[in-house]
Image (cartoon, rainbow over all chains, first blue to last red; front, side, top):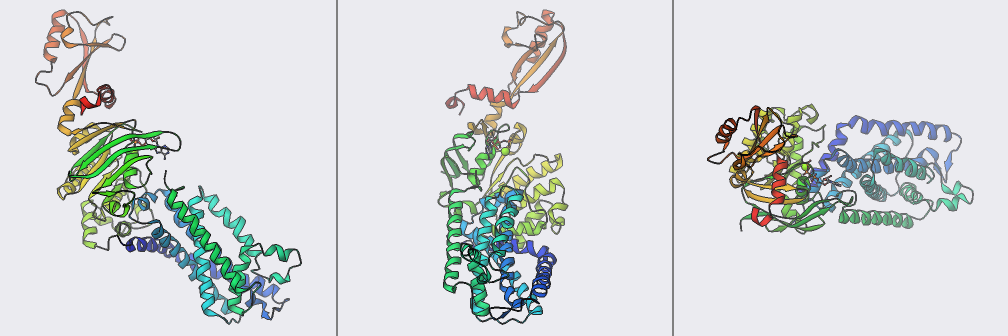
Length: 255
Length: 312
Ligand SMILES: Nc1ncnc2c1ncn2[C@@H]1O[C@H](COP(=O)(O)OP(=O)(O)OP(=O)(O)O)[C@@H](O)[C@H]1O
Ligand SMILES: [Mg+2]
């Protein structure tokens, strides 16, 4: 029997509708936060620190800002998307439907990734209102945006299945992802750090994401693009592996 | 064989160590209404959940129209609609959107005519644009039924369809069930009430403590289960059943204040008039008489004590 495209579409549509119901919130939040970042970081700090590696500081933080939102939003969108049916009990319908695990992942992760890519573009749009921006490698920029959104939505999906309460849903992004992003060079180049912090930073996976993404804008990053791509790729494969295992065993989904 | 659903050797032991199903074999015929009758915790929901793919069995197989429910889950599940026991729905979507979602999820393209029919059958058409949270409890339950019917399933599971539903709605539910059956849908429902099984089903299965005790045509079962009892409250409590009443096989109840007579309500002669005459003859005074159906509990006790082969 062929794939259940209707099923994928149903999940995707449902998840997108959830965001559209709160459209105002979905758009206003990132626009306002980004503007605030520009006022604080771009304005206050940028006025003292003109350039980072030949790039205007205000422009320099744009890729990091987008990544910050992309990571947190991908995770929270996807984790809530799958956690909610578990919480309110509607998971019974998903489990009893002729939908394969891959189709379920495509629906949920696809919707979460779509939302965060749109969000990333909104932030990018907002940024152009504040600072001059030129994108050196637009295709690579889109590729990084998509890959990051997809892999972190998968991570969120896993988190949502794992979580047994709302606290757990928020604790991972708050305790792990946000710090890693801030320390991952969102607002500075890791070259600016003294040793040993520069070396320590290289163990932070988010460094590779931000570096690669920044490269697509300014044609230079903290680490080489190849390594950045490999890092995202590896993360994607790990998440995919965990998801496959979850569905095979029914872990935290079926009793 | 015209079994549309076949369950063989099905067992489920939950992680807690509790065995909720113990080697259940069951064949459901195409087009019948089957009632699964059993008390709280008997394993009814567990059985249904396994068939629908929500719970993983620890033993046995489920076959839906020749499709293995695990290996060939897509074909099997497309044929099944499930109305769960507990209310679970997204409160912020409209009735219409929820039903359309279910249809799509089960692999079918849009069909507004079908959705309209389902919503009208369930008296939800006027509410189609309302969000589910704005509906009454009974209406919400009907939305779950509409969702389960959205993809035109061949087999419909109704897990306690009449729990928390008023008398009128209960009658509507029975009507709907019969209408679906007329269209060829096979229906499996669970209930705690003998009356309900009697009213709705063609065949009845009795389940208790994870074991399917008996599966029978309704009429045959009702005869078997149709025992009633009469309690006679004595004027003067007795130490033993008074002599001369051996024919009725009476028992003493409530510390000797009552006599219990168990009889078959469907029999030609219940033995009640003669018993009352005999009591008068013997001068045994009584204050009160009360008759009642034997309870589900009594029936289980009966069934458990009857060897399976003999009962079936
Ligand atoms: N997820 C679970 N984990 C552990 N035990 C469970 C789980 N679900 C059900 N049980 C146990 O399995 C047994 C059968 O439960 P089940 O829900 O199948 O009963 P039921 O016949 O549907 O009862 P009711 O009429 O109350 O709905 C019960 O003892 C119950 O406590
Ligand atoms: Mg139940």
